[in-house]
Image (cartoon, rainbow, N blue to C red; front, side, top):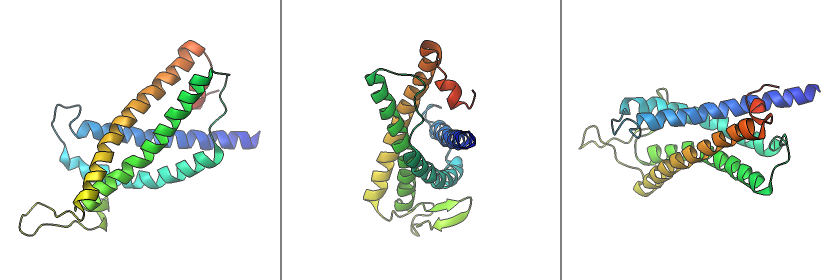
Length: 187
């Protein structure tokens, strides 16, 4: 009984921590101009990058923990197609949650913009002395790859999160089971 409660507490903590990471993703999409019609808030990028780097460390721990411990047992029996869909969405969320910070760090670091955590420099900016305010990429191809993966990853995350929410609502309103309650830490 005690181990079940401890396991449930760890699962809930990890679930909400990664939910926080995904909320950060939506916040950044909003700031990067997707929602506000192209108005970009570049002054927020240092905060975005700092949070992303910090979350990456937590995300790695969560992914290792999730793979080691597996997923919670479904509260009911579901059709095979629903089981496959749920596993697919969970894996898309895991892959996307890992891919976003990696691709962001690759884009920024290889692009010459450096990496820092709230001012603590991890990788120096590579300024262009002949063009003040500009940077020289360390690797244009890696920066471009990071940019592509980060943009694609954001779209995949939006899609996956949307399907995850729809699935949770299906459990609550149609199946009338306790899956959503379990996700929220309620009995």
